[in-house]
Length: 229
Image 1 (tube, rainbow, N blue to C red):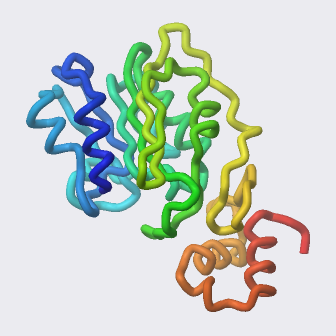
Image 2: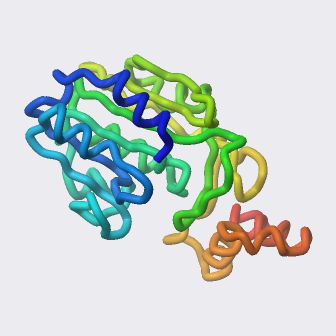
């Protein structure tokens, strides 16, 4: 986890948002750092639940972000945290909608992710890069408290879910894909994809893509986005 993410939390959190509250962290597996020990020790939440797609340190529930509402139900947490994870989730719309849905009205969401220029890092996948306008549109239905760029090509967001919340539509937002090298609205999900598309994702998410002929990369891109061949 980047040092600036820790600094963002230290500068942005208010103990009243956390003390005695129920906290959800999405993408909580310990890889190279975590805000969890800081929050549990100094902010004293009532409960801290970490979720990820695979088991590991700080993971309490193994579940994808796209299924949070199915598992936890609507408005079940006071704070939602998601650090350095959104770029790795192919179906980012569903993930964001689920995080918004499990957050109580009046609750806070903290998100950090990366923008174009940040290195490719597949754990196990790397799909997207966000900019300030992308995140502003995604959270146009929230009260944005902090939204800024850091010097390490990172995007930092703190926002509050309003009492009169109505979900924003995300369908028209096109993000920059590090697999395709351009903006796109959609990448076919693995669950809906035939084997060829799944293989395209695997290859384009790996270092092997840099060794492939350009014609093969172009073909895999067409398969991945569902274009006709």
